[in-house]
Amino acid sequence: MSNRKYVILCPDGMADFPLGELGGKTPLEYADTPNMDNIANKGITGLIKTIPDGCIPGSDIGSMSILGYDPVKYYTGRSPLEAASMGVELGTKDVAFRLNFVNILGENGKRFMHDYSGGHITTGEAMKIIETFQKELGSRHFRFYTGVSYRHLMVTDDIGINGLQTVPPHDIPDMQIDEFLPHGGASSDRILDIMKKAEIILKDHDVNKKRIASGKLPANSIWLWGQGYKPSLPTMKEEYGIGGSVISAVDLVKGIGKYAGLRVINVPGATGYLDTDYKGKTDYGMESLNSSDFVYIHVEASDEASHEGSVKDKIKAIEDFDRFIVGRVMEGLKKYNEFTIMILPDHYNPVKLKKHTPEPVPFCGFSTKMENTDSRYRSDHYSEISAKDGGLFFNSGSLLFKAFLDSFERFT
Image 1 (tube, rainbow, N blue to C red):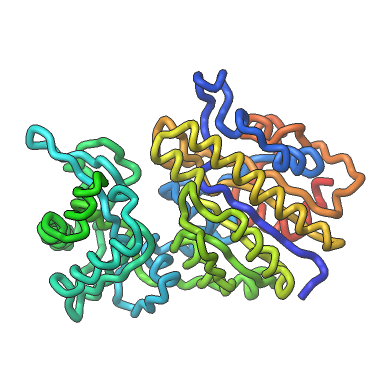
Image 2: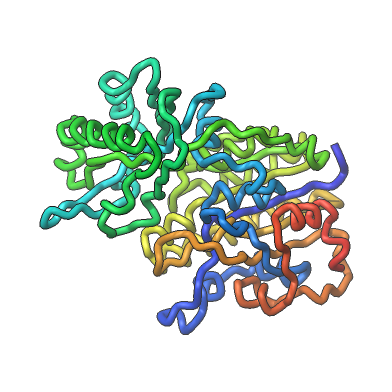
């Protein structure tokens, strides 16, 4: 273990575009973020391309880049990462699929993606439905596993995915679903058949009957996507000579951490939503530094606010992140003589689009080696605009991660 501590904080999907209702400011510019502004002012800020050309923007690609791995080289699909987090060991022929509970509305013979989260179904409710799926749809070749809230897993060794194309349900809010259903390859018909059979089960399931009776949105369908085989990823210790921990409520981020050889810390009350336990994440993260050198704390709330199209909730999520994560982490780091911290979202999620986009994201960073220095990449504020104006740009996550491990010495 080294004397220096390394911390990366990721507010998922925080980056956004200027909004007229905010006077031409982005939610990050508009929000009150004194702690992130202080880091940008004392350290550096710039842009990083977390989503390589040709990759679909998402937390899987983004977090892999942030942690110094080239997604073009190592990424095999989203669901295998989630499987690792859930403790599901994949065989060489196994294909993992993300299974979302969703709500689909029908109107005039057309079907629309009304809610990608099935009304934010609870984990307890979802578990009962997944158990039913396993009994009625499961077999030696098809297995269903419970995840968190609306995010679950289907694993099969009986379907090839060559040519199969799927779309994340959160990328098609309120859109007609027909053209976005799984298609291509030899297996799309079988995937669609499973989705249809699941709808029949969901229609009369006790969980949905109770949700409807209490005025909640039913999870009336599933959406299968994010398919892939088990990846082969070197550990962070092997690649960069450092080890540590990851904290997230999101299975795919935990899965990346597992493949990277990081300790996955489960925080009670970490929901992956606006009501997540920020304090708990900070406390567990700082505690982990007592026995390791590095921690990656990922917070999902700002991304969820964007998917829901709520400017108000996104601003609140950003301000909560600044106050309860960044502020408390900086306070906790004061006991260490040497530390390096970096803050950045994994991708854009413009609140007006309600889906991820691939633009380079802003980062800010500070190291105790930068004390009493005058970097030309400093800024009074941390935002998309100030990061761009500063002129510092990293073309890949591995380049930025190496600069982070070097405590940004080249930029002081």
